[in-house]
Image (cartoon, rainbow, N blue to C red; front, side, top):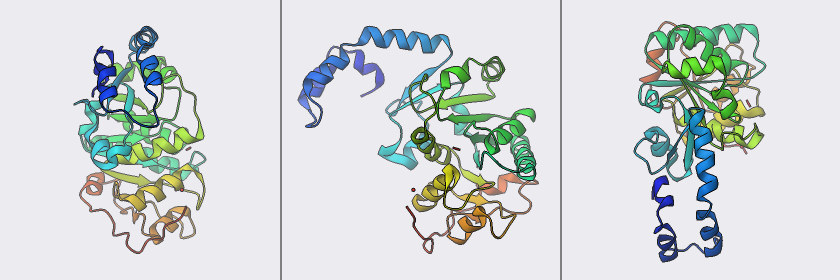
Length: 279
């Protein structure tokens, strides 16, 4: 079924023909009857430039569906053009509390990616996320920000509105546009950031803790997207990701040719160790 099918009076009949044991028919009927409330929400979001795409719709990002399969988000809320995600894309992730050197490197990598026609995918948080997006946008490139909350507020920001209108920025949310930031939402969006990209650059990470480490670990175990980690310090979290087989060392000439990251195969993680599961 598509999202539009829910407004069809025959929708409940389709559910009755194939009921689910843990979802009472009365609850489904009551939810489908809330069409007036849904219409009000849709209008509010539409007025703010926010659209919705369902996992069964043709416009749903194919990378999400192919990599995450049935764990892909059923609904995506977005402001901008999802079509930019059909182009070559690199995810850039890292700590919110990155040092100046890491931030400057990230800005440069975002700019280099933009010059190469590569879409930058990140999480919209301060630190590495913002640096990656800043570098790409200042160079005239395209950026997709997967947010962990406050999509409606971010989409209505005057600075973001102009970038969205120009087709250079797309903001994506996996929960209702008014939803605030939560840690579970941040963890949820991590896998979407990796899955939407053709390669990932992990700039910095704290070993064994934080959203960056958790996202890199999960991607490394599930092999969604080839990941490259910046190995600036042998004692760093990124060095540990490399040693565990969850990432490959970022090439020293990545700033000169970021396109090479898209042509590298995923690292062989058979020797990697599996641990338990922002920004």
